[in-house]
Amino acid sequence: MREAARLYPIVTLTLWADPLGANSSTIRTGGHRGRAVRGSGLGFLTRLGVGPHLTEFVEDGTSVLAGATSEASHSGRGEAALKAPRLFGFSLGMIGERIFRDAPALLLLIFMTNYLAIPPALAGVAIFIPKILIIFVDPMVGSFSDRLNSRWGRRRPLMLAGSLLTSLSMILFFHVPHFPGSVPQSIYMSLIVLLGFMGYSLFSVPYLTMASEIAGGDDERRKVMSWRVVFMAVGLSISAFAGGLVQSLGGGLRGYATMSWIYAGICLFTMLSTVVATRGIATAPGDLERASVISRFRMVAANKTYMRLLLVGFGQKLGEGVGYGSFAYFCIYVVHQPLNAIGFVVLASTAGQVLAQPLWLRASRRWSGPTLYTVGVLGWCLNLLLWLAMKDQSQYWLIPLGLQAGVSAGGFLMVTLGMLSNTMAADAAKTGSNREGVYSGAWLAMEKLAFALGALVVGVLLSLFGFKESAGGAMIHQSFMAILGIAVIYCGVNMVIYLGSILAVRQIASETPSAP
Image (cartoon, rainbow, N blue to C red; front, side):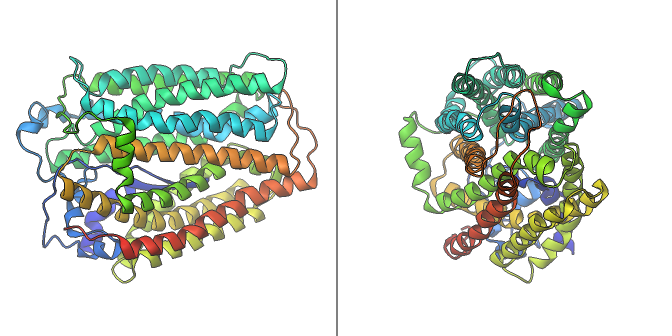
């Protein structure tokens, strides 16, 4: 149990489940060759696909390979740099980042179909197209921030611009001028989504890489990750109550508009707090040569194991996007639950994952990563089926349902983390290059693309099943086929996606290299 006790705080803070789709924090490397820590009592991680070089990732919670960082690279950052006020301010940014990602994912599609009278398929396309473009923006931001030299540092100028754009876009999402016809309306929404997620990239990519740069040692890295992910969970919880807040504010366009101002204010305050808190913190210069975006994509694509894991992550995020895009419809039309139920399920699922982590870690000593992944996915699929029994039931029944979702997702997310960490370690040990900006940008681009594709899938399938759009929030009658389609989308499509990922993980496990 000693091994589990050492890993437990990091895994429970780094991985958590949400009720709409499996959600996990992005993996980073510090861009340095790692040193093996033998005899640490964490050898059981090998069964998850994690080699001995990753002991420091597990213990630090931030950098897969932090061992070779020199004293000089941490000059100016030391113990004074991470006193509680600064660490608090740095971690606040996770709240705004999570709110901007999750709240629109939950509500924007249903807002467009039920309040702007945009047909579901067209609404899905309007969200999907700009996020396709963002896949090129994220790696560009990552590589640019690696090379940027300014009096304000490499990351902070981009984070400042991103915090302003994301906060403005949160308001514009739900303050939409009237246009004649659904096509002009959807074009306007596409432009606003593009603006918003360009801002999100400007903040999130530098912020992601900065976390491994501001700490000067093992203890500080543990602090950084713990604080950041706790605040990430806070942001997730606030996002989950967005629909309930709209209803408590009276619903309708006014409810959405007021909610957007409140959430934009939270985003602006928390993100700017991070920019201010990191003033005076030096970051080591990147060691990547100037290269075109195409060459950087080729660099990522050359890592075949990383690309296979990227595909698994894409499947998980696609399922998450489908869940987010369809859950509000599912609550309203299928199980007749208020939107504030989403918040309660999120809190319960987070608790379920935290409480289950010691059991998953103990199980990892006896069973392989693919086996644990399969058990977790099967539990997740069972949870989707149990949702069908929640029609007109008390919200109290949603609490054990959320707990079971968290227990299940915690297992397969832990396996994915182990495989990805080992692949990153092998790449850094092989090349000796600082690639955290490029890899982080590629992973974030994948997440956004999969999320956007999830909205497109939901929109197209809603149209195929005959869902009727409306204006101003009018609750018009939906056909039996439309309601059946919502159930199929939320439960059936999600199950197919996650069950399919089992085969991919088993193949990757047989090919994943051991850390040197």
